[in-house]
Length: 492
Image (cartoon, rainbow, N blue to C red; front, top):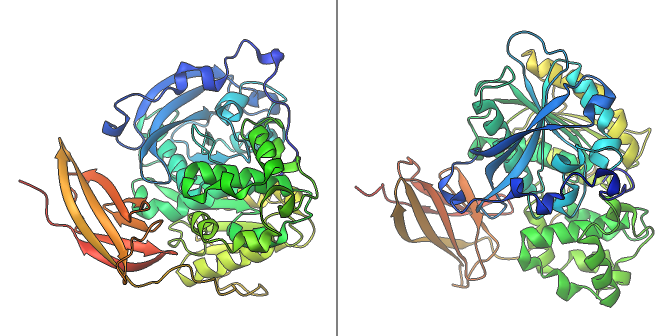
């Protein structure tokens, strides 16, 4: 979300196949049998990062198993950048997430890093890679939107970068091991996987040695952005966000919300027809009523299905961050408005997160993606060195979080429907209902370090290791536990 889009892949790179046509990205039939972080295949590629200095000529790409926003097994790719002059001994790892803001696999970093002049991930943020590599750090760039380009799908984004760390450190290459200290960094759209890696690590990937994260201009609570974005130069970002969210959570029902003009724009944007990341600036000064069957963004944000879908990426509703965080945000941000970041920081601080929050008054959204880089690198360097992490919690001079509208009752029941076994794995089926007995759809169920969402019938299934010691499943709404269920011990 940081700048205008750049050209889609052109004839200059015709020797490279489109990612959507490249068998490297093919998901194997046995994906469900693989553990998160398992490497499916790898290859050596040449990237354009060496143009910015500090990078080795060759890079390794991996394709690995991860988990989507609904708890289902999937896969994605990542590119390992190594220093041209690596230090002797162990090397730390930075999970760098560029704001590639795209809606097709062909514009993913694993593809655009192999050419110059294509995508935000290479042109705008290329110098940042060089700065990180000159620190002597390994840098892993994950295609965190996944194979379906689910832009802003926070659970997928966080889980994919964590699984990328698992995959590359377990390989014991480039001076790394499973104990390697890991940090994460990103701005704007790239701030989503960065912050959500810290939010999800405790339950999803406690084996990843995540020691700190640093981000700027975080889209922390997009439901707050909707009422204010009419007339913004970045209105096109809203179109892209709805496309990505609808792919991750089809219950949003995007097509039914659009007018005829909106359907035409969405069809073009969905294939990155405005260029890699170009949807962000494709509809300058647009208004909700130009594209949706609603009068304004406030009416759009009031819809129940919109609230439910956007709640999946709401940092105020999420569990506390498990690694120290540095968050830099421009007060003049005209896209990810600073107030929603204020609310996210206040909510996370109240849950025990350790955050250094900097509200910068000198720039706006795009400028923030540049101004935060040096202090962010200094922050990560301190975390690698084991120095105590600073905290500005509780935040001062920030805005109060508005009371969210009630979307459903907090009283509910969670029932175990049954268990099935396949080899070393156990699948548990659950049903969630409201106090009045109605199916509770779109709620989160967590069990055994995994989580998923209930379907329209209030039913969900979670697969865990048969040997799991977990016995209690939790039903959550807006990040709070509203019911639990006891899961009996494993079958003999």
